[in-house]
Length: 63
Ligand SMILES: [Zn+2]
Image (cartoon, rainbow, N blue to C red; front, side, top):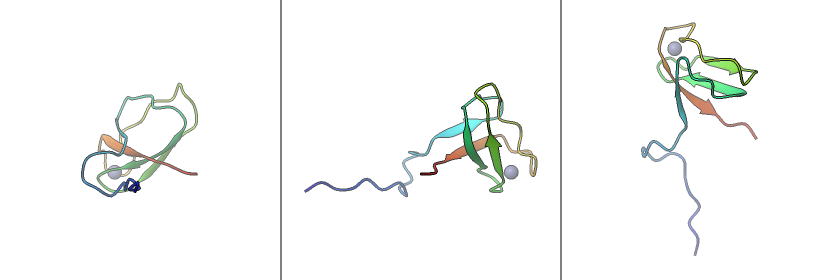
């Protein structure tokens, strides 16, 4: 039997990024208020959250 991995565990499996990181194209959500920031270039760095000023984001995977 193979158990499917679940992402909801509090193991910290989600990719986390901070202000100033250049994580590449994607959608990132402020961990404090949930504000969504979209990065459209590999040269673009994460700003401080425009809504609350927080500096930690997690990537939202879209498929
Ligand atoms: Zn925020």
